[in-house]
Image (cartoon, rainbow, N blue to C red):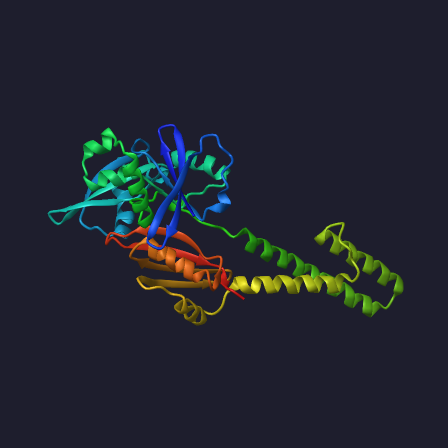
Length: 345
């Protein structure tokens, strides 16, 4: 289920959206002002729509329309027009083509202000992967500078229609640069840190055991055994029952290695074969990166529905499949990044 948050005047409401065979459907809504009852675990992702009054704009005329080139060039164009380019987040929007040039609208807002909106949401377990604007999406359909400055009043019917369109491909996404949407796997890091500590402890215990055999002294053996048990309890807690610390430690390391084996993934060629078996029509793979603990796919699709279908298919054979990023290209397609932890064992 997807949660679409609407920031309106001084209120915040949530639309609950489910994906059906024919697309998306709005299942219900609720107000979130001052409420802590929302079960965020029931949602796969969140979107956030800001009103126009939260955004500032610049109209520029550029000799190209490539989104990537625009993002590289626009900071130089904005320098001097805003307080500091480093203090803002923006996402360019091509409005029209005129006389071998392109009219580009640059919606932007201060990072500090966006953080001020995001932090209370994160405190409640809500981390929107897309920050867009339904009002801007409406203005884009019949663009005029007067509508940008004067504001737009959307009917409930327009809101619901625009929400479904934004799910297919957002007009803008202000989750850019250091405010980009990312998911860090703390469990992977925890397992790696724990394995590192246990490996070091195992080396120490093995060294103590060898020293014990070489010396052959019972007194030293008893003292060393007590030290080994104390070290083991320090690592696993005072209440841990210790019978044979060296054997128990090896068993724990074996278990951790088995857990990490699935996280580290497989070779790229094997991974390509696995993905090809679960690929869906209409989606183009442009890049596959296989790193320890993380597999990253980048590509393009006709719509978000196609991407969601791919994610559903991949989940049948892979663990931790998630949409990391999505954005609309100038050509109207949807560029996406998907992460996965590795194949099911």
